[in-house]
Amino acid sequence: MIYFALAKGRLAEESAGLLARCGVDTAVLYEETRKLVLTSADGRYGFLLVKPSDVPVYVEAGVADLGIVGKDTLIEENRDLYEMLDLGFGECRMCIAGYPNRRDVLTNAHLRVATKYVNTAKRLYAERGEDAEIIALHGSIELAPVTGLADVIFDVVQTGSTLKANGLVVLEEVFTGITARLVANKVSLKLNRELLPLIERIKECIQ
Image: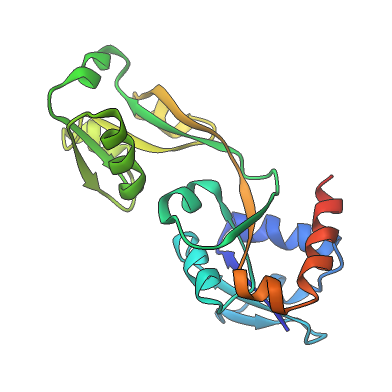
């Protein structure tokens, strides 16, 4: 059996559609259930439905052979696995955002940055040699500048509508081309002979 780790939500829905086009029986993913471990009707595939940040963890540990997750999560988690394919969907950018009339805050001696991408933000500002206080948040990141908790936020931006609704704009694009990626466990790739043909089929589907 080949196990997939899939990020719950919209990414899992798009992943299911792609895998179905590649011959993977994903019908079980469309059933109404609270189960987090699902098995295809033909018994060939298992699906672990997890939080996006947990997909690389399950793949690195070998609990899942393959995973589909955003590049932003891979950058943040920095796990020991193989990134096999850029799947091309779920595109967004990782940006620094804040108030349009307060771009001067970027030059503050002690910048306060709110983000759920704590590791990435720390690496970013360390590489720049800038002093920044990284404030870890797990939801409604845009609220931080609005309430004065932080000067700016570091987050993924897709349409920018949430930023606009809160009076914020992109001040700097840090990473572009953030899309869903297919990742593989290193040991599974060597031992499971079914993985490479499947990966090749997925590659043909996205092309």
